[in-house]
Length: 422
Image (cartoon, rainbow, N blue to C red):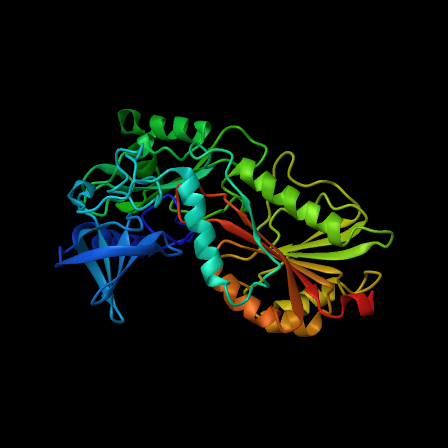
């Protein structure tokens, strides 16, 4: 789940007015500011190089040990944010720097790591996660890495901007009002790329936009529903209107298999477990659990072939988990179960993390928590609350988003008094 506006990663809905304002800010009001000298110490969780000179500076698409001059594009709270206008102007280049395969890499905000090889990308992601959790992770627990099966052609969902005023369709550029040709992007899967190329043919994107009578500026989303082979196309519609799914099918399967493996390792036994899969979408993380009664909670439901396994022990409960008191609805759904206290709670929230997590922890005396997160910062925040009652048993980094700064993290928590209560 990515809130990066103007990239392939945009995951929230915005109004036509907000779309217009977005383009004004990103495309038309870009003001060149002063330059800053830098020397990169390490890479932060956002994929930026960190320079510790007279001012702390975060420089995009740099590597440790590199020095040079960057253009400052933002200042906030005593730190500056900069970008390379031309990597050839670096005074000292890292031996790990490579030429990106994408010709628009330095112009586009979609990827952060294509200027180095994938092994280095994984190392930077691991180091960032280790740095964030250095004081929370027990010494006996080491991060287990699950690298991506491939670096390119994996995305089953993209959002591409259009601007009728300049007759342009593509990804937002950080240097120009012109949009970048999205058909050249390396990340979309084959079916998505085919549709993108077709939208560019004879300006078909414009026909679709005009047919909808849409705002002069906005976005088109191309996405594949699970189990289907022909992508859907929507215009200025809420993200994941057809139901949320992971954008990387192959690594999504790695994640779901890993969660099942953890369930079998820690909970599978002679007694039937009650599992609450919160923010569970289509239940892809829990639907394969054996000897369990599973309740999947989410606002988004997914329909289509091969989505829902018809099991007597699996129930979908449609609720908005960000309303004022979702716990009351969850409690009500448990009244007819054999026992109302879950053995396992799975959290797989959006980037904002788990709202009302204190209420969940207070009400449910669950033995285990599996927390899957796409944002290490909110994961750390929620872990600070969980750790008062639970041990961290395992931590896994699953790279669903190669080339970008994003990844998924799975933490297995076990209650302190588990052996006394079991």
